[in-house]
Image (cartoon, rainbow, N blue to C red; front, side):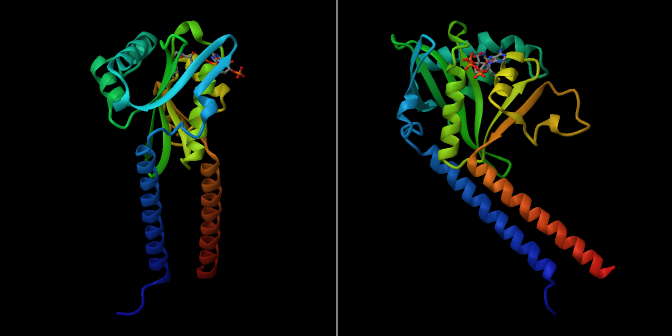
Length: 245
Ligand SMILES: CC(C)(COP(=O)(O)OP(=O)(O)OC[C@H]1O[C@@H](n2cnc3c(N)ncnc32)[C@H](O)[C@@H]1OP(=O)(O)O)[C@@H](O)C(=O)NCCC(=O)NCCS
């Protein structure tokens, strides 16, 4: 039956590598989701004390949050976001938002004041986005009275620390384009349009959301490696074409 071509072998090898990489990413995400408290190594990030605002921050799986806090988080989201959703093609649907917020993979950072009253939260997940392990920020909501004091930035930095520590590739989020406050906030924190965002594709128009992301240290290293490999492959291809022509 002759010998398999080098090209066939190369392809098979690449497929094997991709499968192995995918398995590793899935294991990583799985391990993150098995953690008791992903914030445990960052003790100083359990307290915020700046610009006259003091808050303590806890990190919990949705299943470990009390019903009162979950209900409060939902109502705050509804107050802050209902109109913005209503202006989009998604519309606001109580049931859908509730289901999303209590999905078993959901993790929460909850900030509370000195009286233990919740004042801000982040809903995030360790998850796969296509074939990449990411920390996905689903929601960040602050009560109006405590905004512009640095707590929002502090909470996002906390997510970035965790994403770095647990070797996720990036922190990702979806923002409405018409949520100027949210969009400008993430821009100020150096989030860019992600390659999978409809915005990133030239002929896609009419989307009212944008996907933004920021690479972790691990993500940057992986991207540099992949870019180098792609360049090498392109060069090899060019050489082959020159030889055969
Ligand atoms: C968006 C939100 C989370 C920001 O939190 P915050 O605590 O008010 O923001 P911070 O004080 O931490 O600001 C961090 C940085 O973002 C900038 N920023 C914050 N809000 C901004 C705004 N509306 N426009 C421009 N820049 C803004 C700040 O200037 C600051 O930059 P600096 O570090 O260079 O000074 C908060 O306003 C909120 O909960 N909004 C309602 C819900 C929402 O829209 N969530 C986002 C969904 S995508």
